Image (cartoon, rainbow, N blue to C red; front, side):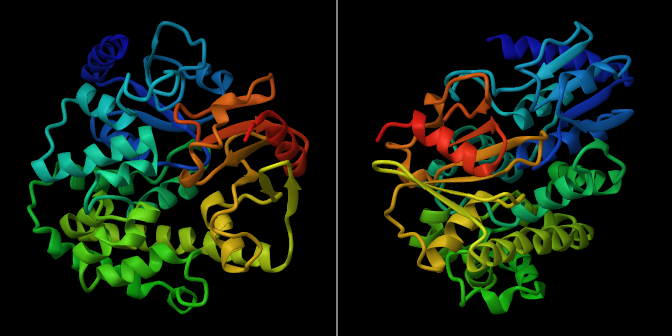
Length: 375
């Protein structure tokens, strides 16, 4: 297991106390956000969010590269903790697990459980919800949205947020899962509650958060939670363990649900292309918008049916002139982006639910993707 050798190398670098850390820019995820917090606490002199090997290679000294890098050829002084280059997601744990091992983290049983699901969700996608019981993703969306928007690229300057996040990771506080209702009261402070009933799918996560503020177990184990991947998560625990995090998470959630509102506006204004093949349909937009709320907004507006096999293409936030192609998990048996090939394909997730493709515009990408997919 070569990834263990990389972890041991990273541990040696961390022990020197003189190193820099780098993860990808653009959209942040829970695993890289928590890993960033752990490396900052472990003494990283600087933390960066970069997207190309050329940018990373300019950094001097020892560098720990995490959640990005398996596709890069980097000098020996760079140690890479990543899992995206594997063909099978079971081969390597995600970056938060690799980094936690490298820094010698010893989380409490409750934190370890919540981070375990972060790891599995990152590797396997929301399909994991079938086995996750009450666990899933909810307030995590606010955590990662704050981190990603605060530093979309370059040097991470808002390190106070990372300090508080690491404090939550190392917290020994214990809470009964029903106590998580207190964390979900943050939903009542959001400015989008009036849209939750008007657009029930696009704002489904918000509706479930409001329900979780009264009964978190019921909200996290019902049919809708199973369908969306909603559940009790590290973000909810972090709010309980470190109340100072609330202002950051609240801002992140406001930004997260602002994307849902933008998805509603895009669909209601008809700002999308529809590309049709023999058995698939693709909806493509020239906006930086999360694909999941866009798909849900198409359903809320009656443009798309829940059972219609669809691909969503949106502008990618990581690299210029690239687009993200995404499909809902319900169509995993039919739509698999691992089938895509050619020099235009920048990235394919090991589970086939998302790919990043280079092209002139969203409609061009939608056509290119559908031509390579078979029903």
